[in-house]
Length: 364
Image 1 (cartoon, helix red, strand yellow):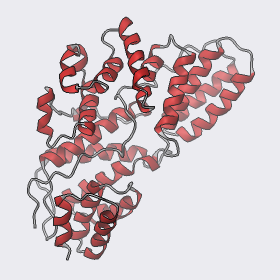
Image 2 (tube, one colour):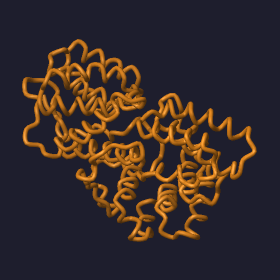
Image 3 (cartoon, rainbow, N blue to C red):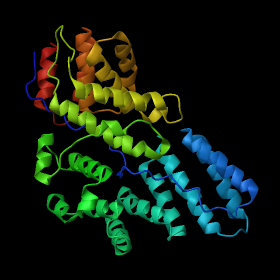
């Protein structure tokens, strides 16, 4: 049985924080030349720890350093504490035990302690959105635009808080709207909030989703947000351009699909880099789709075994996870487990899509 023109919803990282895909850790460690050698060594260790994808360990170091700095009478204490707070926010952002509000508060405190630091101010501008404080976000955006009229963070905030984003985009300066990361961040927001039926509807906003896969060669702590945005959008693109109509049967493999292979390779770079790090618990979404596309492209057993574990770690309930997982279970002829997943999803929902009933009926 096939599903024609299936639209299984927009794929995202489980309602994560509002973000702009820019590097934001770079140069935080600069400007602390007056610290004692002891503090400098600690900061050097923290820097190395963060860039080794060990945010939990780095956060412990930062909390200890924050306590020591607070207790001492040293020059530029607020400046030093602001950098510590900023880095704490960056670490918390990558750890599942902290909410987006926790990291947002640290970023904003950092900016308040060091208001002349442009990077901190720009970050705070966006982070107010993660506290649902649009008013302060807009105030900060206007302050920034008074001195930097082409600032991407400020224009991003003004765009996503506008009452008519489709119309507002035409007022954004060309040098801003044409910036690659800015465009992807705006597209990501539109897909998440504007209920697009098809990616082609982006043309109504004078936008086209075009992922520059060649840009993504190395995953660093500094560019994690940019990678996540690109990954989510690329998954959306491949599922919209090539909707998988499979429910059951022998044939479940995709041949000659360069886009899916690019997305699979992109996911592979991200997952392999982070699987053995302190961030490993936060990549279940990416691991799930890495193994899903791996099985779709090859039907190899290792991807099947891995996705069995991945599904148990994905947040529930989301139809795009359930449908994708049941496709693979059906291909492996494990219809009992597939039906169990379908029923579990059904019991969690008040309103069910037509695709759900088609899939369920095929299992009886």
